[in-house]
Structure formats: structure tokens, C-alpha cells
Picture 1 (cartoon, protein in one colour):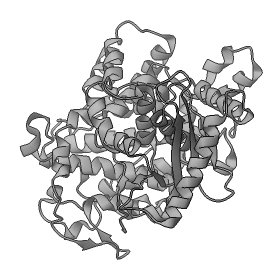
Picture 2 (cartoon, rainbow, N blue to C red):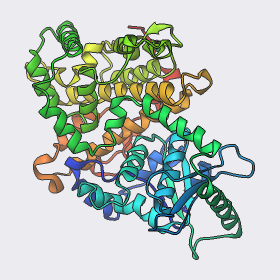
Picture 3 (cartoon, rainbow, N blue to C red):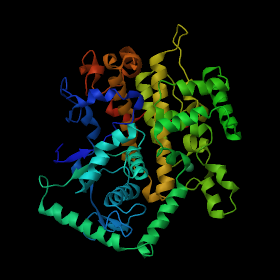
Picture 4 (cartoon, helix red, strand yellow):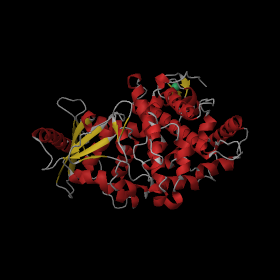
Length: 506
Ligand SMILES: [Zn+2]
């Protein structure tokens, strides 16, 4: 992949708080133990594997500028401009809301782009603002670790970083300066700057700003609680939720825990008591923090879906209760187990492919809702009656990743695209979403298996091997201790759902 100077691919290397130390490994130069070729003849070298489908060249390029006058005075005014290309309808500008500084305006411009572009397409964001560039690519890590108290424009920074974290496709940030410029770049950035100046001059009475504000308000109303939650520091939010476990008892929770218990009983012959369900969720070692939050909130009915909306007296709000393309009430069971819109079936089919490759003699049935919500309590036992840790781990990883991917696709479709069928996800987008996630989990397992770095938090190397061995790409050519090599991937063929064995609907 060609590398452009001053360009950073934004990576979420501050998110795994429990794995904070893991990234010390990544900051060291990674020397690939070997180069290998996959079936397509592409070189695969560790981290880059994830980028085969993207590079800076194929990303949407956007130039961003802020503008301010009379800073630090009562008359301070700031605005932002974003420039895609000549006569592009997406070119836009606005007066900054809140603090009237150029930095605040620039951060708002970045947020605007993340809100309004397809999250499955690579983005290449170009600016001349060193402050904004450093804030987004470096300083945020320190601010986040210190509870954001030192961040300039804290709310904007939190929103921006959480939106970056939610993007499945990569985002590149490029800084233009004297060492990295060209007449073309200067021309584009100056167009963005002109827009920013116009934005700065416009007032709230300006028509365009009005319509933009309305959009923003609309978005806020539509964002379900869970998405907004991601703008709170994850650790705080998570702690708060788990602390609140005892006091919040609701009808929805009761219904969902009943479903979990009955589906788990049907699947594995016994069902844990309700307190045990929460305990397993809290302690789940096979789930990411994000997925634990997600399952917790889903089970507690914190995401507004289906009948929740029926209480309104406004017909347009009541409509939200329905999965409109399917014409059904949008229950959790509908979303994860029945919905006909592209995404759900393909994801479960991919999961099935992976499971069957690992356990070819076993039946696979798409998980029922209770199994999905209760996945931390779902275990497999070996012939000796003891828990089969590798099998349990793979199952929990696959089901939690699958369910979360389906939820993400559903939120994008409903919230960002208003159920517009023209914007339903394409097969290739669904594939790259799930492929990216599963490979990410494999890679994190390999990193954390390095017990020298992780002491107590380490996953045993043999558990990682038990979990993933048998479904890796080019496995025969792997070194004996493959968890220590950088180029490990789940077999690419397993993501090809066209080639899959016939799909049995649940
Ligand atoms: Zn549906």
C-alpha cells in the first residue's frame, strides 16, 4: 500500500482499557516472522491484512477547514467548511455552534463528515490544522485516559472519537504543511477555507444553517440510548450500569431473562438462575467490554425498539415500532432471528461456515434470541464432563460478534438511512464488517496470549490454539507457535457465503 506523508490511519489503540499494556507491543517495530502468499497471491503481513480492501487511494477524499475572527472576545465568530470536489453536493459549511474557535469549528466539520458519509467507505480527511490533527490522532489518548478533563472542547472530542470508533471502514487523517503539499492540495484546501469563511459569516438565521440544525436535532432524537452511551467514557458507563444491576427491575428485563433461561435450557439441558446470568455476564472473559455493555442494555430493554414506540400519540412516532421493510413489529426476536433485510442471514451464515469448518460433525442452528442474550452462560462440555474452554470461547465470540454486527447494521439502516432500500448494505460491506471483526478478535487473542506482557490478564496460548486452530487461512504453512506470528487470519473462504453449504432457516 502506498503511504502518503503526514497521513495517519486512525486506529482505536486507546480503547482496550483492560488491555492497555497490550499496545506496548504494537508500538515496537513488528518484524514479520515470514511472508506468505494467500490464494489470491496477495502479500499478507500482519496488521495490513485488514486493509486489503481499502487504501488511501480508494477512500473518499474530503478537505476540511475552520475559520474564526476576533477569538477570545464577545464578537468571536467561527465557521467550518468541507470540500469534496468541484460542484459536489456534499460540499458544505456552517457557523460553529457553541464556543466560537477555529478548533471547535474544525472538530464540528469532522463530526459532520462522519455523520453524513457511508460508514463502510474509507475516508481520507485532509486539513491544515495541526491542532485538530494532533488532537484526533494523538492527544485524545492522554485526554481519555485522564477522564477528558484536559481536552479542549471535551464534548466535541468525545463525540468525534466515539464516531470514529463506530466506523467499520478505515479513516485516514492527512495534515498538509510545507513538507507535504501540492498546488492541487492547496487549491482544494483553499476552497474549504472559503466555505469556512462563508460559514463563519452566516448566522443562525441563515437558511442553510436552519436546515442543518434541524437535521442535527432529528439525529439526536433518533439516536437510541445505546449509541449515545458510547459518548460517555466506556469504563464509567460500564461501571455505572453494573452498579445499577440490583435496583432496576423492569418488565422487559423479566421477559428477556425468561427467554434466556428457556432457550438455554432447550439448548443445553439446564438453565442458570437469573442472578447467575448477570454474574456470568459481568465476569465473561470471552466477550469484549463493548459486547457486555451491549448485551446488558439489550436485555434491560435500554434500546428503544418495537412496542416501546407504541405508547406515543403521534402516528409518525408509532411507526417506528415496525420493521418497515418487513412489515412486522420490530422485536428483538425479529431483529436477530427473523428479519429479511440483507445482513442478518448473511452474518449467521458466515458464523455457521466458521463453526462447521471447526466442528464439521456438528449440527448448526442459528441461535435463538435467548441464546444470543445469554451467550456468556452458554457453555460446551467435553466427554469428561468439564467445560470445553476453546469451543465455548469460539461460540461466545462468534455469537456475540454476529449479534453485534446485526445490531450495527440495523441501526445504520434505521437511524442513518431511514430504511431507504437503496442504502441497504451490500453483500461485500456485510462481509467486510464481519470479517474485520472476527479477524480482530483473533488478533487480539494472539496479542494477549503473550503472557510475558500480560501476566494475570493473559489468555493461555493453548486456549487461543483450541479456539482458533482448524479455521485459519493457510494453516498448514503456519509455524508451530502461530499465535506469535503477525499474519494470522481466519480462512478467507469462510466469509464467502455464496459457497456455503445450504442454509437452513431457523
Ligand atoms: Zn425486518
